[in-house]
Length: 101
Image (cartoon, rainbow, N blue to C red; front, top):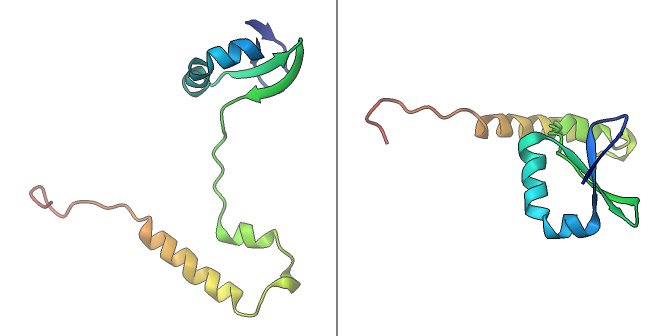
């Protein structure tokens, strides 16, 4: 396993054979240390194992990806109701009292 220079982030190069034999260990190191691994075959990069960046998208952002002329009338009202429902379901649940279960 050798260190590899990558302008976007620090990553390490590993052979495809090493990656196959040690996949669980590589995934654990990616999760725990945030290190990216470039998998090489015959010295050429073919794949990358890297941490996933969390991305939260609202319904409004999702809808904005589609042209407005393709939407039906009333879509904005429906989306508002869906977002209110999601907010209601994602609210923090706190116990009412110490002995409530």
